[in-house]
Amino acid sequence: MKRTYLLVVPALLAAMLSLTGCGAGDLKLGESAVIDLSGTKDPKYTYEVTVKSVVEAPAEVVAKYDTKDKLYFATVDAKLTDPSKASGTISGVGSSVFAKLSDGNYLDTMGSGPDECTGNVADSNQATADFLAGKTVTICVPLSGDDGKDVVGVYIGSRDVNSGKGTVWAKS
Image (tube, rainbow, N blue to C red):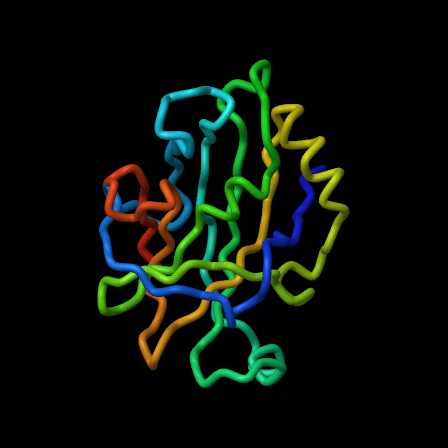
């Protein structure tokens, strides 16, 4: 049975930053890529990742926040490429997700998602255990537009979006 987990990272939407940069390659939703988050080809931090969907959050969810920007939910599958050298947690993947905005900038997703992000919120300890056991874990990552700009894609990779060590999944 595949479980979906709500990704919890520090402070929602208020702490988001806008960054400019470009990732290596563009994929369509549903396509997979191997992402090296360490920058060293270390299998402990190399993941097979698929961005499955990006949908606008329901109006009742957006109404809970003091924002005029659109909110989105990205559904991401992640799996360690070499579980025998496993290290870290599933949150390492989630903290490397950025919204690609319509103006080409990137917006950091430093926040915890509302319960509606998945509808199936599970224990983060179980998510980490499943992840370290080599299972595919599905997480939901909240994204936001900025200053009226829409989210047109999802970037996962190096926190330095200018490094070229990341991948963008195009929303449409």
